[in-house]
Image 1 (tube, rainbow, N blue to C red):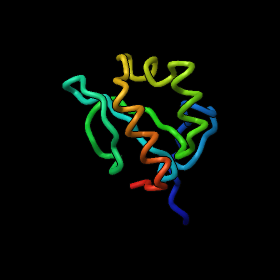
Image 2: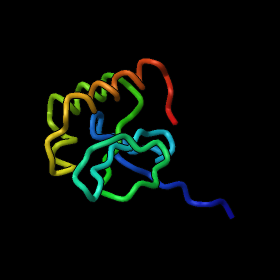
Image 3: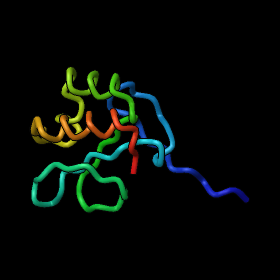
Length: 90
């Protein structure tokens, strides 16, 4: 029997994809927003495709801010953009 693959929704394009294909942005228990490539950090998480268009869409609609219930610092968006540009995902 094949193991069930967890699905998550991208905050940019709103498509459901395998959790492993997405980048997790997490608001830790201390309120700090960071990137979580392991998918195991404690806190509230939101997911994005590794696609710069999805990041722009999520930033424009403030989808990450609504999902994480906290303002997203500009450096988090900058780091996401850099990670997507270099093609590194984990």
